[in-house]
Length: 298
Image 1 (tube, rainbow, N blue to C red):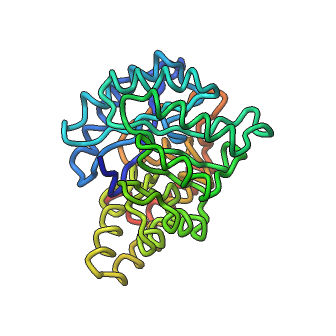
Image 2: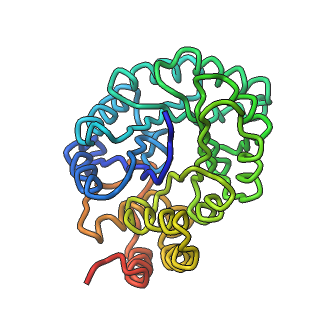
Image 3: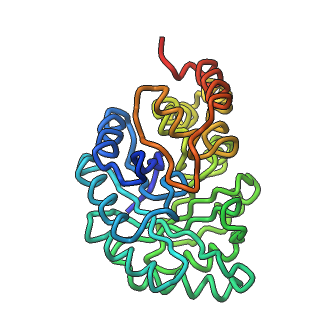
């Protein structure tokens, strides 16, 4: 299985009482089905994965699988704080129709998460998962950065088939490409919009981008234009979308993403506590950013 192209990490809709709204989730997928996307990511950071139980996660995976065309991949975020629970959720994700699992580094005991512990964790999950494993490195959220040399070690396992690197460090992304395991398909995916276009230039196969929820056509076009030789067009579009991409990640995060979708007429509910909805002043700033990027229509 190859993981190429741009994948949106879907938000998880919750209603005013904090309950899952699977109807809204199906509607979001249906809207994105119109775009030239290879698939979807469920329960990444933008999906509020730490706020969702194992049982809820399984329902989310099933809902996305049913709503997506059969040829599109569903990558399920199954990383939990223990290896045991990660294995359990990975098996349940496969049973729900997931094409692969995205496994974040365990982070609570970060002082003990040395190379040996992380290697053992990912090998344990890979041995037990019925579907391919993609390593998820997101140091801004976990406080841990997995070095490219360790990713290469983990990637030697036959059931580990890629890495999503959200460090935003283009030098690190280049090292991941340079050290990628040989003799197998192993996809390097940027998890940061700012490093996505430079990443394509050094050999990354694709990206998992929050911005692909609010600007799916643009995110796909940046990659396609670059690959077809339209470097100037790709650069111009990248710079146009960049402020909006930052607004729904490092600037205002999940509340910003859900507010942006609402402004586009796509209800994705509200964040689950302790995350709070975006306040009026920030919403006004977000609206200006989206308007400048041409993401609110006419």
